[in-house]
Every structure is written in structure tokens, then in C-alpha cells.
Image 1: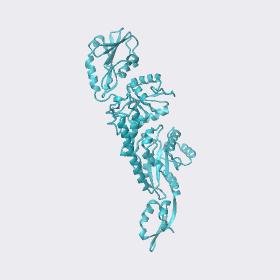
Image 2: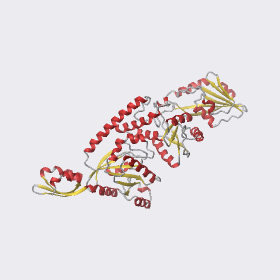
Image 3: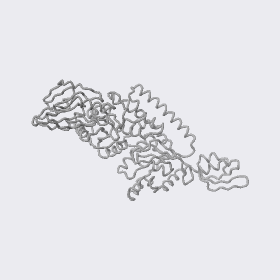
Image 4: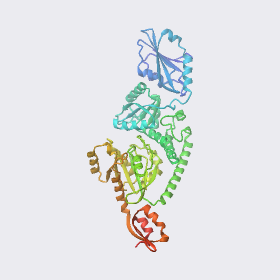
Length: 528
């Protein structure tokens, strides 16, 4: 027998059936995340043992407590909600005698628990490390999701495989897998579940209701990482725009969960203090952000008009070593971390090739499988560096088991940007971590490629030579005779090209130089 009782001692419901979620689903109870439900359950049966699913009802329905009375012994099992840092984080179990249960001060305990809950919203509490459960289709995908979750600051405590191809429109996963996930949440005392796919607004809301913990999908997780790593004004604008585009269709039904006053995955970013605004205000903010990005694109276009040197852009899968290679080639001092999306804001640095030509290297944001379309749209201003490049360096982590799959992902993004017709050098990075015969096989399979270790510098000269050979196609050797009054060109010849011979005679300077066709056209009046 199960008795459901309110705080005034009134019996709301009596059921003879087993204690299940269905027994509590239709009850009217407090919805505030800062209060317990105002309902407690007394379950009377021959056995004393509560199942893990029954215990989890305390968290799922925010019960004041759950009491199991055994008819076979003089004991009572008491299950209370456990509050940690203002969050409903699990359960606390006590075994009492009948006399102790009678003396139990229900009102005092509940009052203390609710006082602990009043700090912040239940699901949006700042915590050093959230305990996350990952769910995806296979081990390979979960391995990458594990890296994303760790980068975002979560502690991965369990992984659940969902192999069913057909997605459940209500919960994304089937009801059987949902029960398995509930069990894992309870056993691991998890406060976060991350799906390796994008959830619909309805699926997201339904899952949080069923699991009683925060639910995040792959898109929101990546957006959270971008929010952490955006430091420039441009980067913050782009991330906020992507977050608002993601949030807009998910406003309905999320209610107070949008009060992101705490912390944790999915709660960071430039707009974290203003996410309780309605659709009209969000659309207005999106419009303003797009205007600001348009200004950024216009400023970039003006800057490009003044460029005289070729642009070489590094592209590749996230964590392939682009920033390390950038530092090797230009001494740019770009942040290097062994984590996904460590570099978000693009960096441009000048360098001089062995042929004497000045070039500009550009480091871009890394790509990833299932890259959120909100990010591709928002980062269009940054990705224009890829579209404007004279040469692309596709940096590949040669030690990765999914090398070809990751290369295909990068090619897909490059195709979407319309740049696959550009000259591309494939740079197999981290060659020091794999066998020499494997490196040689990669170079045979991809003819226009080099092997390098950006960390140790191995292969740097070969890469620079290959770049030089391509850039040299746009260079020409010219013989010049400059009058002394035109000597201002000499510095530019040394900086932008390679001076082969230089001789000062009576009234002029004779120079033979290897320079760009563009510069040669500007000096045509001095050519001999």
C-alpha cells in the first residue's frame, strides 16, 4: 500500500499497486525549482528493500521524503533529498526503528532542505565539475564527445550506447533506454546528461522532466566551449549570435530554466545575464549582432585591400596542431593547449619564406564533425580568411585513428565554403608519434603533402620549401635600374622579395631581384 500525503498530513492518494513513477505523475505539486514538492510518500509492504528506481523518485519528483515501512521487521527505510551547493544532487538514506520514525521531525527537516535550495535555480548551479553521462551511437563518437565534455569542464562518469537508428520523437531514445539512463543517473549521482546529437526543443524539455537533471546536446556543448574561449570583441559577438540562434526556438516550455544565474555547461557566454528575455527582444538582439558582424566584415574587406602579400591560411580538424604549427612558422605565440577548440579567435602573422617573399599566415578555428550550423553562419566573418586565402594548409593529426574520417569532415566544410578549388597542401602533423613507414604511406596516398612535427620542428624546412615553390609561381626575376631619387623601392624589394644582385654606379642603382608580378608591374618603368 502506498500513501501520498501533503505537509498538512492530508492523504492525497492511496494506491495498492507497486510504487512507480506513474503513481506520482498526475499529482498536483509545487513546480518551483527552489522548493520541494510538498508531498511525501509512505510505502507499506512485507519487504523493506527499496529499488534504485523507487529511490530515484525522490529526486525526479522532488519529494519531501520517501518512507518504506516493512511489516516483517521493526524498521523503517527513510529516503531524503540530498542538497549540495544549493542543488538537488541525490538522496540520503537512513534506517530507523518504528519509535525513531514516529519521533522524526518532518517539518524541521523539510524547512532546512528548502533553505538550502533557495540559493539559485536547481539546474543552473555553479559547480567546479559537473558529473556527466554521455549517450551516443558508438564508442568512437563517444570518445570525441568525451573530449568535448572534458574541455567544457565536466567530469565524465558514465557512457551509454544508443544503437537504435530511428529517433523517438518524444525522448530521442526509446523508453527502455530512457529507463536505463535513469538508472545510470541515479547510480552515478550525475547532474548532467549529454547527447551526441542535436535534440529538438520538445525532446530537450521532456528529457529534463523525466531525468530530473540538466540535459545538454552536442550543439549546446560546443557553443559552451566557444563561449569559454572567445576573448576578442568579434569572437564574443559571434558566439552570442550562435547561442541566441540556438536558444530562440527553445524558449517555449523552458520557463525558469532560462534563468542562467549560476554556471555549468550551456550557461556561459556573453548573454548569460540576459537570457530571460522574450522572443521579440532576442530577435532584436540578433538583428543588432548581425549588424555588428556586417561592420566587422566591411572593416576586414578594407584591410584586405591594403594587403600586398599572399595569405596562407591554416585549416583542419580541432586539436590537429594548427596553433603549434603557426607558432613554429611565425613565432606568433598563439595559445596552445591539448584540448578541443583551444584557439577560437583568428590570428594573422607575417613571415618571410626562403625565397625572400613576405607572406601572411592565418590561424582559423578548428572544424569538427557535426559542426553546429549556427557557428558556421555566425563565424562567416572569420571564415572569410579561408575564402580569401591564396594557399591553404590542411593540418592533419597523423596519430589519429579516425584520420580519413576527420579529413573528410574538413573537406566537407571547405566545400561548403566554396574553396576546394584553391591550392591545398596537406600537412601531416605529429609525425613523431607514428612509425616512419606509416608516414611514408600517407605521403604516397596524398601526393601534395608533407610530414612534420610542429612540436619538435621536424619537417619544417620541407614545408617551407613546398610553400615557396607554390608562391614562386607568382614571382618573376627582373633587372632594374633605379635612380637615386627612387631609392625608396629598395627596402620594399628586400622585404617583399629576394634581391639577387645589387650594384651602386654613378647615377643609378642596378638591381636583379625575384619579386611578385604585382610589384613588378608597379616597377615596369625601371625595368631593363
